[in-house]
Length: 139
Ligand code: ADP
Ligand code: MG
Image (cartoon, rainbow, N blue to C red):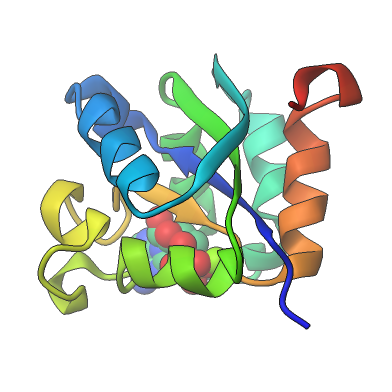
């Protein structure tokens, strides 16, 4: 059975561009409920840990640098079939391939600075939520 939680980040460029409000509006209008949220900034060490699965990829170093370059909004979202439905809402990793009307199509700058993160599985949604939020920060 698919779970009802997913984790997202509004990445540094989208936050800097003042797209956070529009992105959060799309998230709410698509039926996701915000269960936890914070404005924070990753250190390079924490960004490296978050993206450790991509350590061997050629883009890892620049991704870590980018993700620690400024504030991000981290959020835990609830909806039936959350992981899959959120991946549909955000669109393809490369915004050039993202469907019309998706968050990445509308708010990404490029492949690296693609506006938002979205969990790829229920297990990772829980791991990523635990990375950012304590019990006291969840509602
Ligand atoms: P997604 O975020 O859609 O799950 P991945 O997990 O494959 O995509 O990649 C994590 C992040 O790394 C992407 O969202 C993007 O910011 C960056 N990224 C992925 N592929 C590339 C690439 N070829 N060049 C530069 N950055 C990339
Ligand atoms: Mg991913």
